[in-house]
Amino acid sequence: MLEKITVVGAGNVGATTAQRLAEKELARRVVLVDVIEGVPQGKALDQWESASIEGFDTRVIGANDYAPAAGSELVVVTAGIARKPGMSRDDLVRTNADIVKQVSQQIKQHCPQAIVVVVSNPLDVMCWVTKQVTGFARERVIGMAGVLDTARYRAFLAEALDVSVEDIQAMVLGGHGDTMVPLVSYTTVSGIPVSQLLDKATLDKIVDRTRNGGAEIVAFLKTGSAYYAPSAAVTQMVEAIVRDKKRLLPCAAWLQGEYGLSGMYCGVPCKLGARGLEQILEVKLTPEEAAALRKSAEAVKETMAAVKI
Ligand code: APR
Image 1: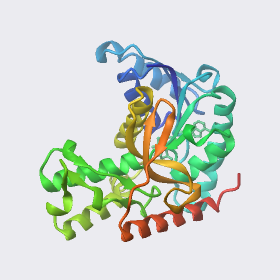
Image 2: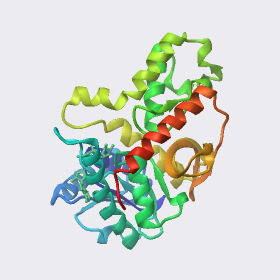
Image 3: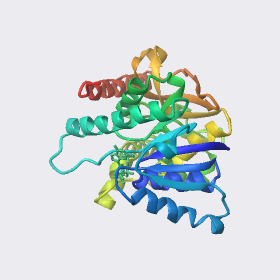
């Protein structure tokens, strides 16, 4: 158990994450920070009032400043705005980059030893902004996307096969967006290659649905985007770090030549433990998967070009 985890952004993803972290008692205190007056305080108090029923002793505290967050060992960044009608993708990138810049300066000042898990979108670019502004080593700035994309992929496969979702092993790599790369060649069902259990047409459909998983939820909700699965994905990453589990999870990591890519964030297989990102695993990809990863990386680089740090 850590002493303190801070979650920046008390919106849907941030607040649900705070609740999940508290319910798992991953820290003695969870601090929820947001710019909107009263919202983090109200949500934090509401969550703390559920403690006696749910059986956790983690204190959830809300704030509009970073004083209560000082010294946090881990910070989750979910601050940002959703795309509004008429707003271009580049405008959204610049607006969220400004928000993440501000947040990163506060993290650098108040939580200089923290491991940072970034969730704000566009994910790979916001990870880069965080790393640049904090100046933290790559071990301490990691992005959440692949765990969520993989969870969606596993859910769709379990449905198609009518088997337990727990028996599906898979990884989705690449940038977080419609160019993501589900690794079908490494997808197994209790060790059995999935290609032996599902035909190509069905698999292609599932891969496509995974790539559009975020948009599918937005189309239902109309205002707002997914948060139950995203917050569960962040919590899995935080738990791997807090409990030093050395889990192998697909995360956005700063690349320095791995997979032929460098100077950018992209989703790759990572080992997460007490030091944060402890290792990047380089696995062999099929020529199609390697090409898809390169294409995905190009999309991330294009988005990076819209931002000045
Ligand atoms: N500091 C702290 N909080 C901020 C700041 C800031 N500078 N700017 C905005 N926020 C807060 C907003 O006030 C809001 O409460 O960030 C919160 C975002 O919450 P939502 O709008 O509910 O968005 P949410 O669904 O939680 O998604 C947050 O995660 O998955 C990604 O794409 C998603 O980038 C988005 C982020």
